[in-house]
Length: 438
Length: 161
Image 1 (cartoon, rainbow over the protein chains, first blue to last red):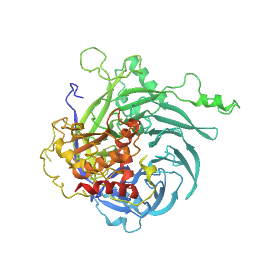
Image 2: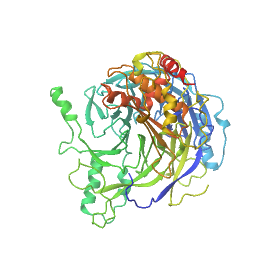
Image 3: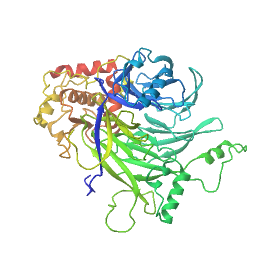
């Protein structure tokens, strides 16, 4: 575990703890797609909606679930209202709505005004229970809306992944029940550009699914994790223009080809596991064939072959977690990765070009047996925070747009960590290697 | 496995919320806890089938309890590893026993301890599966929200005061 390391270049500075915290375990937090809000799934059967401007509690959604709320997901692309899906250990998923027309105006005004702190504007119109999705036989572990908002995926201890489609308001149809996994399905996540779904499981595998002539089918299976895979998340869209690839001056031909390869592959996948590793996967671009012949009347068995995807393990991140890693998250702005888990640590990783000369700068310590040639890039830990939630486990970590008064520009981000202590903490990544006295 | 035992919903509080046992509520102290104290906490748990304690049945044994100190000076997290020896290799209640041990220690020990409960290697026909289940935080949390299963656990732990 203790490789010789370079000094860490960044620190995580505590910005706030969302207040008041829950007095029981919190499982997961989802930032709103366009408003400065975050919803937190709590084991006391509630969902707490906090402001990311004032870091205070705005709403507590109660009465919908009979057991722990395990997962929350905001529907993207909705105008004038917020739509929240909640997945619970009671085996059901709930859909909640809240009219946000007034709020959006207020947020605009606040931004113009610069300060403006309030809790009152939210007034009393609460999240309205809108419908319940029944079907899973046991605990729902995770749910996620597709980027277009057209599909909602849910997964459960019953080993299945369900895809729901909202035909009209509150009328959901089950369009697929995927039963490929041999164990609890822990997490589902959508590709940011395509209707491609990934699921992670207690059976130690990750699987990917796509629609093939009206049928959703498995198109890839990722096997390298040695234990339960807790979380799966796709990289953001178009990241080669935002991450370490954005600086194009002075690249070697090999590096330029690598960027081109990444662009053809599309967003990558990050997974984390009980085996204490975070792994990065990349799709192999199709050789030649531009579009597969989905509608040529070829027998379905062959057609399925044609939509199979080839995902290879690109990297194992530096192994500095000592217990199960429950969550991993890509920044959509910078391509940095955050991870957290049972050991209570938050780690931030950065990808960079590997120094090819043998000058001893890079420690060759990662087992990447999948790649024949030495990888062109490497991941390094740039920040490591111990005991982020005191002695408690961290169940979830994610990036969110920064919205408090400390924000300096549109791309500023915060990191949200959600723990067994019932707290959601807000962190800022800053350059510098000294722990400040706050 | 846990859940096949009894399907019943009644929400019960998480062990993290309020430790049930008052006798061991000294969780503010950083005093050392040794293997013997861990043994004392779990040996008095009752077997779910017999009116006997796990200690007297040699399901839990002092040499199979290990306390691992924090792995870094920046960390205050210690690990307690308990290996349990089921009375017979096909004991279907091995999972419940393991769960009882885990719940007992989560309730009695300060939260800076991580509890790893495993079936001692080679003593149970499905030890891998049971270990995986006992190590899965989410499954354990869901099991503890199961009222009837919690009833079984409470009965097992009622002899612990």
